[in-house]
Length: 319
Image (cartoon, rainbow, N blue to C red):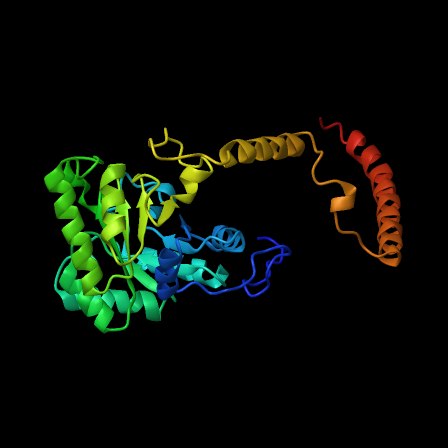
């Protein structure tokens, strides 16, 4: 249990980016103006608050939490309830960024009405401002848009299709593949998608699609020509405990900083250097005096008892 107090997300940190709420239409306006869109994943209150206060435009509560938070082998095992839980935590922290929730594997792969019902839960129960779905699911995107739920598409390397793809492999590596991907992206935009994530495709393919698509593209492993970029937060700060993918740039080493802090704490505890007297709570002076007086009386009483008892014990001849 901690006595530390955390202020709510409604209290901005000093020096934080001024509040101008990001929406799905705002992303399109950023594309029109040529302003790059910054995006990161987030899975909890503290991380989301930091990311939001640093001015990131879009926070994705990614199903990647299955791997980087829950320790799963891939993204397939995470459930709707787990995603809802983390989306709620992120939403409580965010004031400016657009909060997007990943629809996990199995939550939209059956009847469209089931996918719609699950998407409604993310908006209604968790406060998501948009949902993300993988693959060319045009009818689902159309239904979600009709239900007033903003949708972000996701094409290229789609992690929920890892078994079909035979691993995490770069997609659209031929001219025909690029044309098919472009057609799918255009169809998603026509169906109502507010943006499309392009993952794990050649730079040239992403540049072609970005130039033709009326809505923003957000790249991850797709080169610098997309309208925006997204990374997994844990990749950004070296908390994945694995070699990074080619497209990952590590901007910090949180693992090293945290290890140093934890080891220092352990050493201080072992050497009784923590907590110090200054880090301890104290009784008021009158209470301390009473406590000391009581302790002294108890010591005197113990001394009398011991003096009386020891001779009797010795006289018994017992050992």
